[in-house]
Image (cartoon, rainbow, N blue to C red; front, top):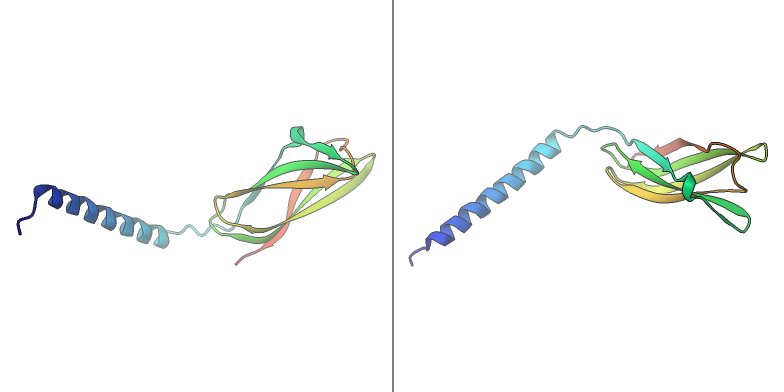
Length: 124
């Protein structure tokens, strides 16, 4: 059976694609930066809203590191009617390069700035 030239071209392109993909995966696996999780929180104070008995402040949490963070605990602190108040949120699983939408609940509208800190996380 005689091979068509088009079959040879398709075979060569397919083989090059497979070799390229395997090479990329090997290099990516061997040159892993291994940076620890780096959670970054962006508060959306302008999008905050009120529900009965609470003031909700939405936020986005991003992981800029190379490793996954599990049980990530974030704490928002704000002053409401002269009293400092805290709200904690736990993100169960935050893989590298991903983000998740969360919301902090406070008893009322903050008097000033809302700050967020990372309490801790677990490495898988």
